[in-house]
Length: 81
Length: 387
Image 1 (cartoon, each protein chain N blue to C red):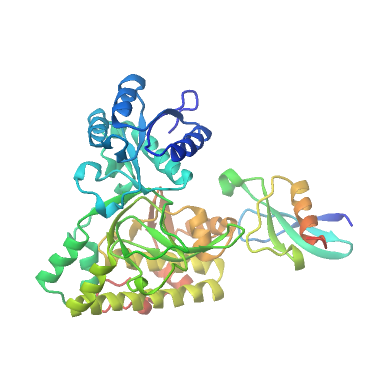
Image 2 (image 1 turned 180 degrees about the vertical axis):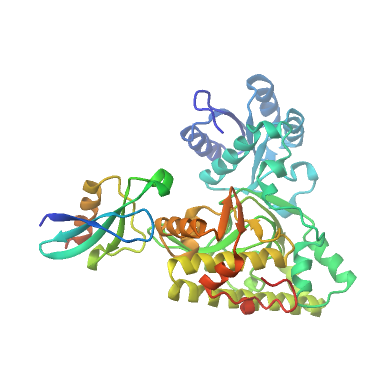
């Protein structure tokens, strides 16, 4: 089942406000946030702010773009993993 | 910094052919140009004259004997070098390699490369035309202390009254020191413990890694801190001790530790107090990781480090060396680097801290302490400097 993104603004307390809720079906599975210029070399990358269930991770990687993030989340959610 | 147009030439003097091949590959991958490898001092000296390398990796025992003439020549030419040797650091009989970074063979290739990167970085700095290795290794992050006492003596005197003879004894057992590059393991999980390490300059840490490579730092070791007083009682190390910055380190043999504990009750008592404080600090860190927010964790760590640097006389007002990367801070506080960056930004925006290079200055200590709910009771400082 493919993922669906819904743009959202996130009050992280800093400039990282652009985000996407990530749904699979009607379930919320993750929240991605785009890193602002405050993050220097990581600016523009996507951060797994929260993953739910199997998409939860103690130290998730940063993603270069939303496609990469969705591939990772899909892999985390896959029953074969 | 390495000039990518013209890779830095590294003389590789190594007696073991297999190690030489491995290092040769690793150096080439790291964009260094390898001169050699040479397995004798004679060959290394010839290459030194002919190929004019700018850095070197030297095994002190080559096939034709000790590499002393080579080391002397490298010194004369001002070429910084890393020692990679199977000889134990405390078996170094002469002072000719003192102050050069020393890596125990077999060292991980990336440890050697990290040490070389560090050396090439500082030797490229015009401020260090005549590189004194100690400065070149970045040890100048530690400000000169007004208190000239040895950091171990200073720390232990906070816990017990020492006699002049005991102070001299402590200085003597840690007189033989060596420099270690940043991110170098001093003892690895699974190793048989071999005496204790004493940090004299720089910062190190205890940590454990998961199979995935992620790590949790369980303690920071500052000047005057000993790694594991009673570790000789254990068969294997259950965690790893690694330098965070360049460090000046002394190695104290297990027999020496046992002798001190038996012969010098005041020193033994102070050392055991030190161990209790280490345990108390670990409890506080557990509270930090388990029950404090991102911002509170960072604030708490910064408050603690201020007190600890001051306790060994190396704080400069409300400023102290913080030679840690964002990854180090993330691994210390159990957070992502993103959360660490946000916490640092928040503290900076509020005017609570200032980070300049490797130096942290606390601009509003009462505010930082309030954020962290910081109480220094667990450090058991008595009437010593308190925040």
